[in-house]
View 1 (cartoon, rainbow, N blue to C red):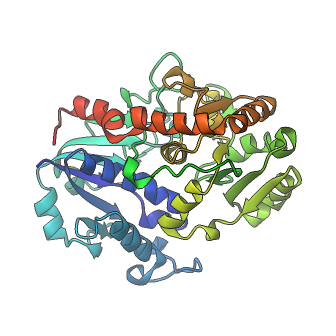
View 2 (view 1 turned 45 degrees about the vertical axis):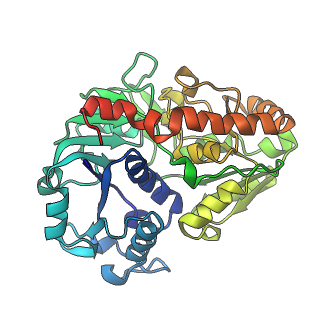
Length: 384
C-alpha cells in the first residue's frame, strides 16, 4: 500500500474547528482512495495557549488537546505526529518512528506550505504544495515572499481559475493545478429536513489583511459581508452567522444584527463535532468571500460550502467565478449583488427539496475523493 503524508495546521488553529475538518478531510480522502495516511504538524511552543487564550506549556496546551481530539475523531491517533520546530514530539509518533514510516512515501501533501524543514520534505518521493488561499499565495509569491512553496514538485490550488485567462491573478512563477476541496461523504450523511434558516461560520477579518496587485486593492471578508448586512430584511428570511469577530468590530456586529442577522459566538461550536452538527442543523448556507477571491475571479469554493453541499444543504454564496468550472443555479447558487442574493434566497427556499438533492449530487460528482483528487494523483503519477 502506498503512503501519503498530509501536513497541515490543526493544533495551530485550535480556535477554529472548521480548520480541522479541512486538513482531516484531505487525510480521510486519501485513505478512502486506498492509501496509508500519516498526518504531521509542527507547533511552535511560543504559540501554545490554554483554553482561555493565555500562554501555556505546549505539552498541556489547548493546541495539543485539539490535536488529540482531531486525531482520535478521524482515526489517526496512531498515525500522526505533533512536533516542535526542532523536531521534538509533543504528541504521537516519535521522530524515529515518523522517519521510518514516512520514509519513501509516495506523496507529501503540504497544505499551505505548513512543513518547511528539508529533512521532513525529503521523506516523500513527490512533494505537493497545496494552496488554500488563492490570491494571497500567488501575490506573495510574485512579490518574492516566502510562503513555504520551495522544495515542491507540484503546485495545487483550490482556485479553479488560477493560472488561466479567466483569472487576473499572477502565477507567482509556478504552474498551478486546480483541485477541489475533497469531502468524505460518509462523514456527512443526508438527513432531509424542511428549511429552517440560512447559516454560515467564519472569521470577520480572516487571517490576512487587504492585499494589492497590479494597482488594485482587495479588501477582507468583512468588506464583502457588509454589503449583505441587510440581506435578511431584503429577502424576508432568517439568516444566522457564527462569527469570530474582535470587540473592536462591535459596530459591524451591531450592523449585522440591525439588518436581521442572528450573530453567534464560535464558542457555541465545540470541536469538530460541533461544527458538523451545526452544518447539518442548517437549512442552507449563505456567505460572502474574501475580496481577492471574488474580484479576481479565482474560482475559489469554500471547504465549508463543500460540507454543506455534502450534507444535502444548498449553498448561496458570493460569485468568485465558480460557474466557470462548476454547474451553478441548482444546489449551489451564486450572487454578485445584495438584490441578487435576496432573489436567489427566495428561489432556494421556495424549492428547497430540489436544491437540497442537487447539493448532495454536486458533492458526489465533483467533491468526493476520486473526482476531487484524481487530477492531482494523475499529475503526481501516484496510485494506492
